[in-house]
Length: 78
Image (cartoon, rainbow, N blue to C red):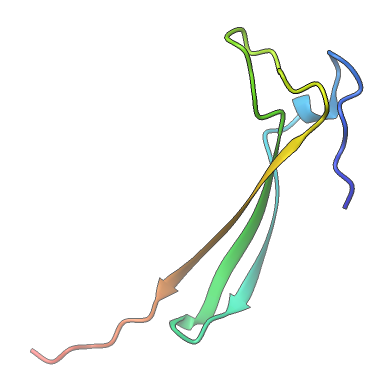
């Protein structure tokens, strides 16, 4: 995948959206239904001044990997 690069101070591709992310399910024997979920999130222009102008003129991106699961529970005796 190729992420867009800002071409100038206005009309940049990164001004059109907040984030790009991909998600997938993975196997996890300790999770409910043996599955967990992984997201890879990409955010453009992470630094702004007090007026909302981007300070990142190089078209840099910030990324994060987020994983979550629902843990399987066992029924206890009363």
